[in-house]
Length: 472
Image 1: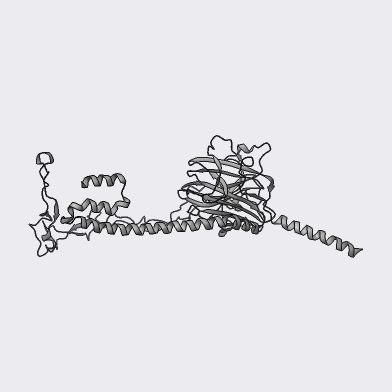
Image 2: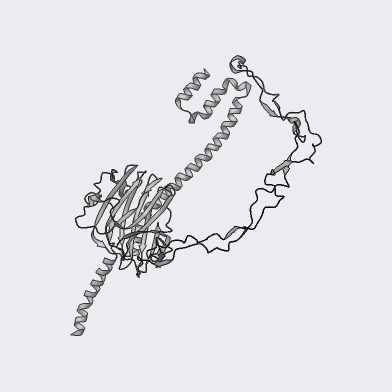
């Protein structure tokens, strides 16, 4: 009966829905590096990529990652996906962890999401020229400090791929902790960039304000064949051709002249020099006139001049010359021939196109191709998902516990360093007092012993031995 069939179909529908839910909760790709990378990831065979990749634990954890093991090297490694991931149909989340265990002064730690390659392509050929769809992740060197998000998009009119850079990318966290980078691509053309699960940047793929250059070219462009006419005058102002220099205009008059009305201040000490020999200075006992020359006492400011208006020869001061006018120039007037700033005329842009959403190429592989001056860069938990909740759940499970441990350790180290600095300042004050005590005449025989006993915990054995020998 119809009712009987409905009863039989109900369990099948429930099971199907359950499998669909389980399927939806799985990431499209997840690399945890728990089992190593050999045999799964392919190291580039190009000679320039001499950096050695290693499967190592993150410092202080039992969790493994893919490690950049040598400084000042180029690195390249790639993982081909079992099947390409499309970016056109719905939400796609790109996420991965990076820990800069030795910091990052100059280098990259980003991923390249590789588009499908031509038939016959070998993963060992992976290099900087391998075409990608998206490049995402931290990069820091000199003035560059950003979490890149770059889209390579094919212009349907020209067939050429153009790099489009996010205009306002986040900066790279400046520490040695584990951080997780997330890019969420939405079907409404929105892209959100998160660092450690917090949104740092949001943009629209089709907005000219968000990407450079804009994904959709302008409708018109300046005509490259349009040339400015020879008689085009762009000068808004010109010297008045009718103006004449006045007869009394003296271009040679000096800027300043002597102030003839000035008088010497009362109390001026004409016979006193501004500097005198230091009366407290004494010729050193080991000074040799034949070898060192005639000794001269150092100079100091003449104390007699401190309360007087001045010392030495009085000279009449200078003042601004009222007759000074400088070089004469004709006044500026509006240019009667002014036509404005010339611009070429606009013509239709042959590369212009319209579209409702980006025509993303699929992701067929994930590659790391970087140059860095630092070692100790650790990649982990590389993820592609079609559900933000899946990415968040993996972040909470894999990254958050490690980050919390690292953060607490960092706080403890900073507190210990602060305590050490405070103790050091206290020690300096104590040493200063004890040094003064040691200089008291009747304690002179015990001076070295006081110093050695005071600083004993901080002196090397060799220096203490020297001090004891000197004391004897």
